[in-house]
Image (cartoon, rainbow, N blue to C red; front, top):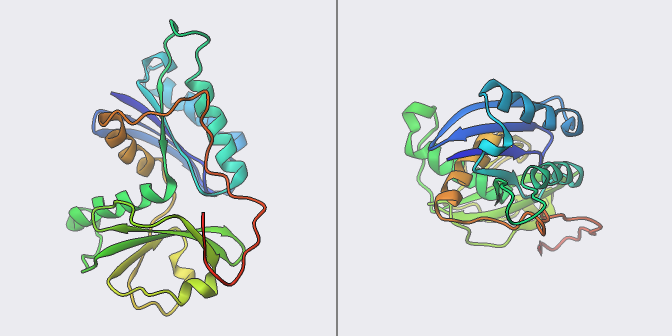
Length: 233
């Protein structure tokens, strides 16, 4: 089971290769929004370094959003191209769509299961809240149970409104949680990474959760007007 995973929903461009339950290698760049320059090149480099071709892949996983419109479009286009086949007789890897916020929640659960190995503080909590930037002073967030399962819709709100939410018994995590000040719950910074996408993609592959590459579209959120109230997506 070889899976190529792509993460372009944020400012970091990241591609990882996994086999079985193990991640073999990852290439990432944190310079900011260089997905169009680097993503396809990272895919070529990973395949070449491991003496593989696209035909050797069992699946391609891609972060499905929400996130950067341009980043999601680039990741989706490349993933669909890698999974493209002209007719049913052709071979192509299967496509796995991995919700961005779910990949963070899954990573939190993984780290908390191995706190000593991953140097991750052990805390008591009943739910996980993942938040990522949407635009200036606006963010997305979603709630998960302690096992990383969704318990709310994805929501979008202004940072000031977010600070007024109830964080009791909640573990807050995301790539920019330090910008949320005076929280009762201890925040955990976790950056965007194709490794997070890969770990959840492995579970989805085993469960047979694949997406039709010909019709796949990421979760774009655009042309919205943020109000004081919190809106479900």
